[in-house]
Length: 182
Image (cartoon, one colour):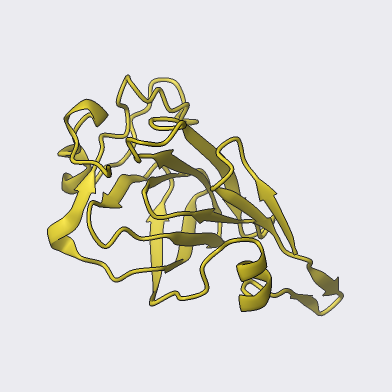
């Protein structure tokens, strides 16, 4: 397993060692000792599974209390996954990193607490699974609008297209108006 820091060092891309043959493949998606050695918490409390059709954009989601770290991977299809640093005291506040995660490449992304998370579905259908380091708390759940000009996220949305958004994501606020971490 390789743990690859991104341009925001706390966000880590994880490349598993995949063993394959004519029957299929096998890989470890999580191993507590290796993850702990890489600085990733091992006390996950919740697993989530999300399925979405092509063109769907979910996010940018975060919780202002009970902040969740997320270990994200795709088990069907492909997504463009984004992590945004929402910690005001951080030198990378307001910066973002992205990765293409797919069932084929088997990459995972560690998004620490204090970051917002969003993704855009590139394939006809995609299923994303992720481990969370704290429980979902709807009273602390917040959303930053996906196209905030301050963030300038380079979503791979085809020209002339609009992403498919939930009512919650349509109500997202700009970073400058958001409740954030200290």
